[in-house]
Length: 163
Image 1 (cartoon, rainbow, N blue to C red):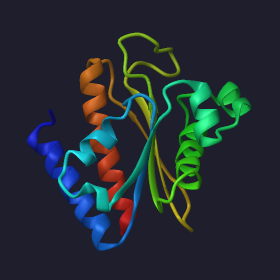
Image 2: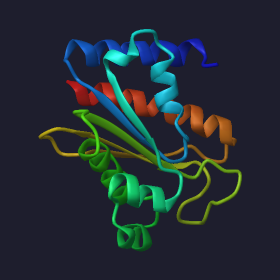
Image 3: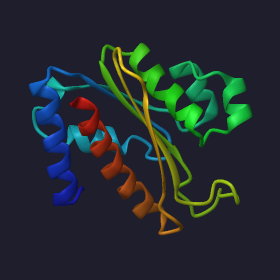
Image 4: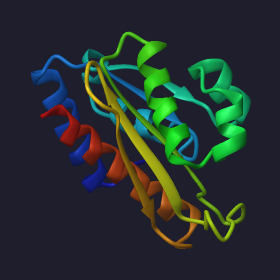
């Protein structure tokens, strides 16, 4: 299902989290659960993966993660503030102490001049630390490729936040 490079990144991420006794939660919009699926593809991942939230709709972001509706209305679902709120919500609604959130425009449609196809906002929240945010603009490289690149960046961000 996943290529060798992605599986290697997932294994490294899980190994590092387990060494640090960290539990991971995911909050996913544009990836539709692929980050959690990739992590749980690795045998023994249940020791580290606490849960995943698939929050594809704005209402799901509000109901499951507590993202304020006015924040989504003001900034847009694909934005830094919403990604940060998603990561914080995943922490507060789980027993994890590390959470990654992604929200973006995978395409082929849905882009705007300010948020073109391929724009993805990432946030990683860890207990008692500031939320780390990053935005990637992959371009219109195709839906599958945007989602694959999002997996790579999400795992790399998780690993950076563990140190």
